[in-house]
Length: 227
Image 1 (cartoon, rainbow, N blue to C red):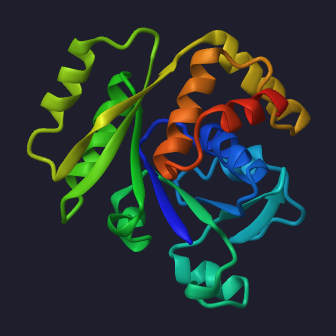
Image 2 (image 1 turned 180 degrees about the vertical axis):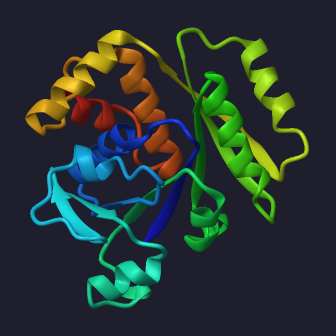
Image 3 (image 1 turned 90 degrees about the horizontal axis):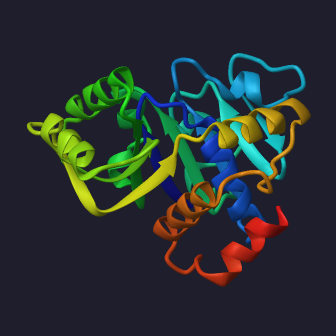
């Protein structure tokens, strides 16, 4: 099982669900773990009789809410950590404590997800500043128009933290069309890509390729057209 961290104060729930959907259609078993303080997945993803901590299935994706570490997930499923039946665990993190408990320093890939809203970027970097050991991160940037100055600003603010930025940067547009499509999907409890912008789809394709370089190219684009 490969663990992938998505760190930051920016809302990442829908993005993780969409990336997970691509992976499941590619034949992978995926678990999303919501370790955030707000636990948005509890409200976005329908669940029967939710308890303090639980795992529910949505669009062939398993989603875990309320767990403090991987060992708790394994105990809930009556398995050991080594025998959890997932190819990928996508971990939504908005605090350093969860990052350490889920040992994302050992993850195969970590993404720092942020917009350039002052709260998002400063709270996100506050999380990184609490990491006790160096950790590699790929920037996932949401903005209407990302400029070199924005990237330089993020680099400047992160000086002194233990983050080591990967060369790749993944951009997502802050488009009202994407937001409207996501809200409509939430209303009907479906994952559909047809009304998302091409830039949003490109961003998801790049994330999938970073998670596993074998999963990219025409096959991924074809799947996104079908979803």
